[in-house]
Length: 252
Image 1: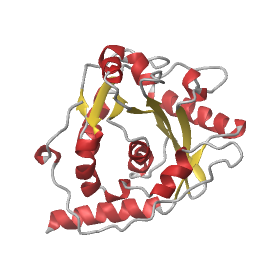
Image 2: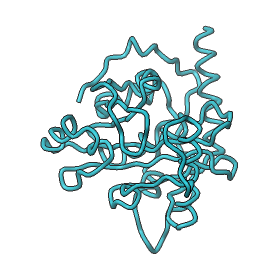
Image 3: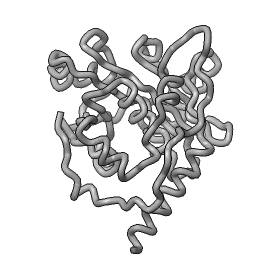
């Protein structure tokens, strides 16, 4: 009973924060620069980059046609950011494919669709414990929208346990050097079609509505994507979390 209450409390707090969250696609130059500045502060705080005179961090993938750069706003303030890159056989260039070609290019050659969330950063010193969940929820929204076969994560060694526990990812290789960062990253991945229902059962607020998915990822220069709050779906607060060790894990 105590475990159920703990889980219910976790789900309740997460859902409460989701009501305060807006996901905004960075489209104007000011929006992009705010996120590049946030990246710099976050990575510098973690010791993951060297100081830079421009106090910004951007790369060629920010303007790629298969990338979406989001700011995550809590109570109207920029709190975190995530870039979603999508690799397909026709458009294979993403950060994860670039860093781990020996692992991911064979999957693309088989016709797989890979959703590659990257550049996950949060404002240093913020104390929102559920913010990582709210930010990385965007990866599950993207996987649903693009009908992903594989969801990836590029994570430092000390962060891999989080991705295993929450998203049921598996490590595919040891950490490697990663462009622009001083600390190596490992590639992790999940078979999204096989594992999504188990993740949704544990974290129901990772679900999304068709409307939300379209508004976030359908580009239209005449109608920029607005800030969106959480999806419309019922949440059963009595759902119990099963330990990750009891969950079967899909492989790519």
